[in-house]
Image (tube, rainbow, N blue to C red; front, side, top):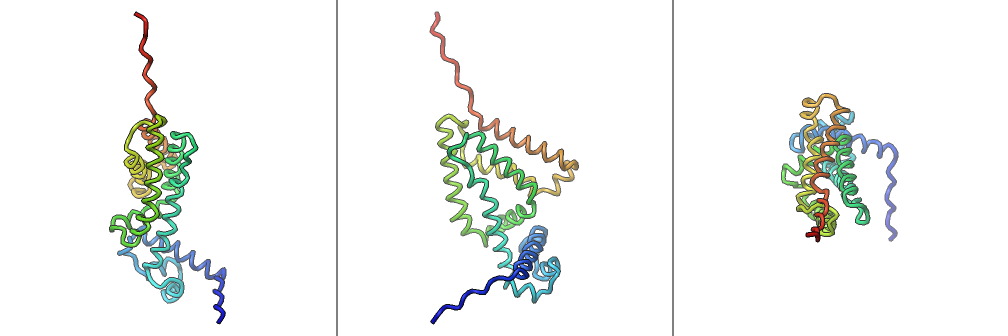
Length: 216
């Protein structure tokens, strides 16, 4: 018996799924998973709840799809650290990409942060099987660069975690940052320059000590 071919998704279905995901991102980033409801998501998407349920069977199904897509987007800059590149340039490029993501995607960052604050009930397998191996690989790369004297000695794991803390603060606490630094354009330039300076000072190797003189 031949298998029934899978039905192609129509453009309308694709568009409606995007509408639902965009609406859910807004609702989840404001309300968190527990506070969000399907009614709120349907209302934000401009469709009825039964219509929404045609595309997604539950609030959790929507949330998981958003988180899966976000995980890949969030890990891409770390994934692209080039072992063949100049170490400090690679790290500072990574910081710039993380700052730009925080500027452009604050809702996505808050969605991820809310999931982690709840103990990662839906993302725990992804953290274990996607993030952890990548994190260990990049820590080993940083450690090699440090052992070669191309980066200053530090704990590679804490370096990466500190970069996340420094960069993602501007997304997760976006409202607070905007109040404290109202000039958004100048504020972002200053924030990026500051974070780059902190990381550069931390990881720039000390110049070699001058050779001892043999003259008496």
